[in-house]
Image (cartoon, rainbow, N blue to C red):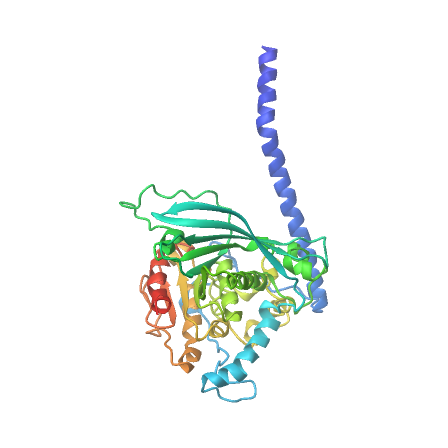
Length: 456
């Protein structure tokens, strides 16, 4: 009996001890990240000479006493910076004036106060194809390539940056340059494996984006943004930001994580320009949530990206920051999210307020003009009100005067539409689908809208 019990004990120890150690290690890693994040955040505030505590942001839990506002009647009045009046008071009435005067002003402000500047001394990238395989998606033969962008780290060998990308291109009978959608996200889902239906014939679900794109003869490129820069403040001394800064802390003007992820998308576009099988004139960018913010940033600063699909990007993305609805500037500038932005942005949750910002989300969207942008949101009943679907709608609505300078259209209405209504008549498009925190239910709508531009 003793022998059997001992064997059972040894077996259970063998099974569960690694799990216990894994949980302990995971907790230790999380605590370490939080500690170093706080130290970096504190150091940035010291550089900014901010001695006061940041104002706390509202809670995303509707049951908390400090829950974020989700009542439209409680939204305060606010005034947005006028996109068509330059700092010197000059009124902007033509696209040439916009490009010569107002757009550069906004870029300067947005870089300095929010997303940060891309440094001049970024090392070169060498792209290699790590592996190639043929696969079939929705009956379409696809060639998938695992790409790696190796950043030259000779200036600081302690930090290595290898950008990971999965590129899928349909193997067409008539080979030609193929349009590609860059998805900012991850190669290995943190939510576990997502099982697809064996058949969509009687399924209530629509095919996922790879299948929908390849059925059009288009390709996809999934950019693993965490291979560019880690998504926490503790990682700012590593990744591409840490490499350029040689392991030192950022200055207040330096780029944040969203700008670094957007830079990665631009470097992928650079690589595409060297390939005959990718259509350089038809490259789009897509992302959801924080990756939707990064997709908008990438498009705003890189004119080679021809179309945008900006999903549930919320505050810090397409949603009007001055609206006190859902997530706020105080949340964005906290230790949880400050790393997405330049250090200067912290000022707007302490010494200054959101009303002191010389721009808002509509300004960032306007930087994309005249290129078409589709803003996507999910049902507030499912993804919640934190991302503020109406705020994102208003971001596009208030960017439309700049598109009109080019003779293009904004939305067909100024009123926030019923869920499911597709506002796709113009170069600024919006649709709130009935699903959750995903662009998934809007892919077919986006594709139909995108064909107007990519088919011509």
